[in-house]
Length: 127
Image 1 (cartoon, rainbow, N blue to C red):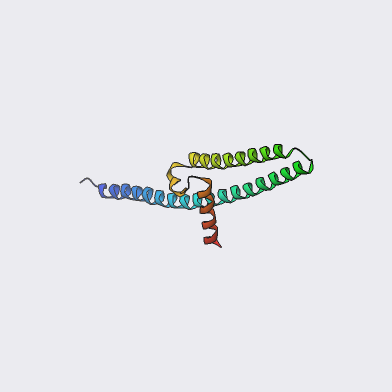
Image 2: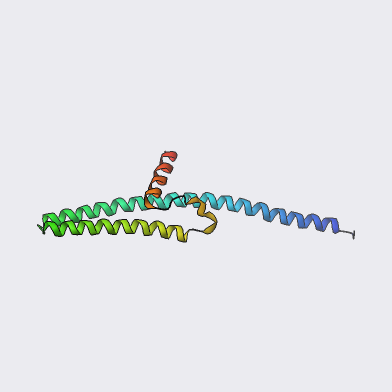
């Protein structure tokens, strides 16, 4: 073997070891970050749902106090419920679609109910 070849091989192995270890540590850090981000997103969506429901109940109360036709109010209430349900499912679908591929195993839910359950379970664990 030529002079210095041993040192060169050790250098190459050191570079490769560094790249492997730093990649593993980076993935672990990002995994933890994405898990925290998921919890924050679910918390925000839960708060948004509560605010939307409160706004709709105020809207419906205002419609009742304005003495609108009761049938018209029922139709509007039903439309609002459908709109909220569609919003919930679209939000979860988009979250799953746009979530980074390497961290999709963090999203163990496929519907709003499952996401809410996961958020409540995570909230209980952190409390």
